[in-house]
Length: 180
Image (cartoon, rainbow, N blue to C red; front, side):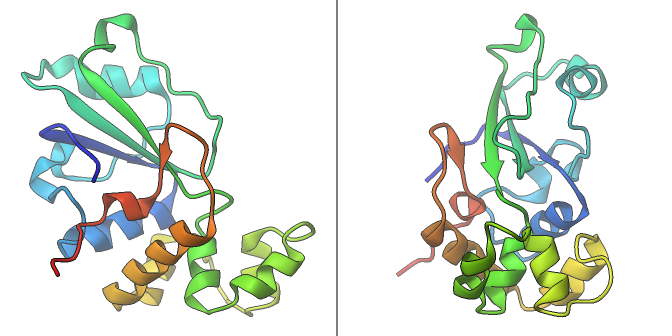
């Protein structure tokens, strides 16, 4: 299980990622609670310097864990040296795109894998799965994953079928472990 600081800054790339984190927090499925989140909300600030200016200059007593939920393996997040020992930056990768959760939830991962070299997950969702509307929006994700167990199972399945690079974690690694 992942070890997080008492304060967690959860930075999400887009609306879909924000909705997923919010659903999981609201249903007490993550290893941290809303009360431990910086400002008790998901943050939409992808630039390290901007984040530093807006949030870190408040003078925290404890170390902060920064969770960056995104589909990029390479996007940088630079903070000044003054914060090197005051924060842990953890990449939570949803590569290739958060829409992979929709594909997995629909049970179409094998079919997508056959087309993956020629089709992005978002295109597959629209063209093959015939999903309408803005599938990356908070509203769409919230309406699709009204059953939190479907979301949790899909996140766990995503971890099973994907491979990450060293230093990255999955959304599944942020889930509370079920008591047996």
